[in-house]
Length: 116
Length: 115
Image (tube, helix red, strand yellow):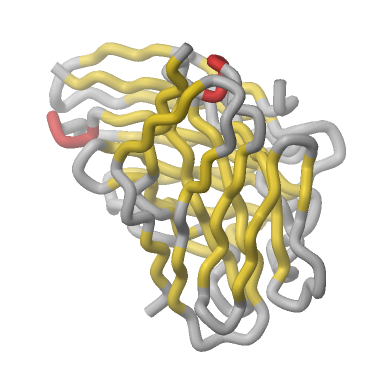
């Protein structure tokens, strides 16, 4: 158990809908990262928050947004869902802001999103 | 651009034997970190081992060791005394200074341990 929690574990929804994925980092970690894992794209970085502030963006669609709250949990909002958004979404956390090469990211169990 | 290459889509090993999973990387940045993660069929990503670009010694964590050859830009994972529970996908990943604080992953290697 990495100490990172994600809810829900599974989510099934329809095209055009909006969903919210939730992540709680390990105790003491200030950084939260979101990744998407799909069969065709592999593991892709979406976005990084550190202590409530957005730090870096990756290949995140405009239909997707995220935030990190004062209690450090984070939410990833996916809207106008398409079939291609079906994937495993991971949250990872680390202690530091990601500015050192020793900053290990610990992953949550993931949320499996299925868009029908 | 930084890239991780795992050339073995699948590997098979007999229980109790050692296995090496290959990883090569491409970066011009002198400061980087290399990570290996295990993803069992249940889906979670488990951190296994880390190697920094300035580390003089190869990293070891229990049955996992990293064969780091900086000049060849390779960071192969060695699993000794394989167990049935080692059957999983294994991903090599890299982060680097100035890399937007993200991990870049390879496509993974599926390891099957046979009894």
